[in-house]
Image: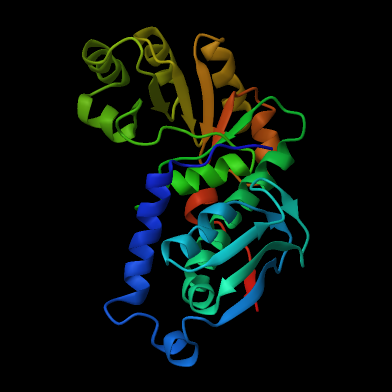
Length: 281
């Protein structure tokens, strides 16, 4: 599969911050003491567990930013699912650059591949269902574009990227506004017709007001079983439906069976275990 990565400036900004954090003012004390600038090595980045890869080109970009003469040969692509023991990439060149950039590369690669692997587990659990798997804004500060890219590598789709690209009326908005109808009406008077409006509901009696008010998406929060199926019937195709809350690979198929269009879940970005990857010289 081919997934467009985040823009180069976003990737480099994360990597430069990571380099600054790791090297401080003194640099890599260990590596520069042991190896001179002309020492070269060959190494392999290896997956120690089965998983879906994301961030291989992002992680290995660090060697370019360290101004090291390192040649990177990638043997798999982001979005590929690999077996334990698979060689993901081969590195050849400056020992200093390879060892100094090792942890930054592996931190990002392992983290993003963990997100892609978690996403893939949910997507696979859906089987042939038409329902799509989406992420949320529950991301690591500063890493949102990279983590949402990893979700796409795992076969998922992205929810809004921030507060700026879609309206999402949540329970606290509704509480402060007094009702779903009041909140939707205020939004529709404020934003243009091209802005998507998502309305979160946690009761069936809130659905009609949201739909009539002009919601594009009805987010069904923590509804399950017959109640979720009834919610889809009440919406009746007048808006897209999204289920959220407490979704796992074990129950996602049952949730999709209700007929919802999208299932969104936060843990694929905020709690996905990282994929075990290593660099062997």
